[in-house]
Length: 258
Image (cartoon, rainbow, N blue to C red; front, side, top):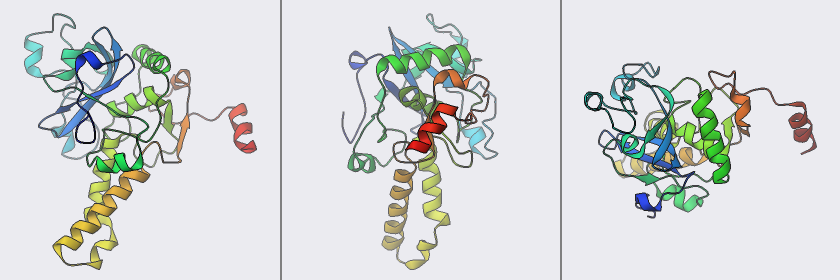
């Protein structure tokens, strides 16, 4: 495991690990928290439900919990999970969906982060203890994690919150997901930046686009961005869309002192 690949063997897994597996020919990845004893807690959407992007992605991204073929032959451990949505617990085989196993890296250096061209594999943010991670995951398994949205509240956002306790304060940007920010960064680098008019050569356009993509990914990482706040998992109750709750009086006083 290194810069080229985050692949990990099952024997190397530890409870509290943030794991993921690629879907649909590496089009996207599904994320979860390894709970130990061969179980994974992860955030899914039900089959046939729109993600709500209003784009073709609604038809491209399929259910992360199970395929229609699997529903015909339910898992002997998990049963038929093809119609489940929200935060669920599955065996490792059902989570992987015949894919390979990868571990999400925390506390990486900026150089390592930028060396990983694909988003959704690592972050500069530090992970909390495995006890805290499993506590959040177990709590959300019982109480839910709001409404699934590919850009603001997806499976990677769920796993990152379990690992860090961080939530995005603003509601005008994408969530914590490296996949979502990488997608937005790629589109911005190609379409939105006025810097693309500074050169007409293919190599120049490629250099400008690559630079903008890397900068956009970096500043949007959960370990760098400023619009985040540590939120106890108990305060998520009653926030179905995960709107940032108002800070407590103690938090307000602490912020003023800082």
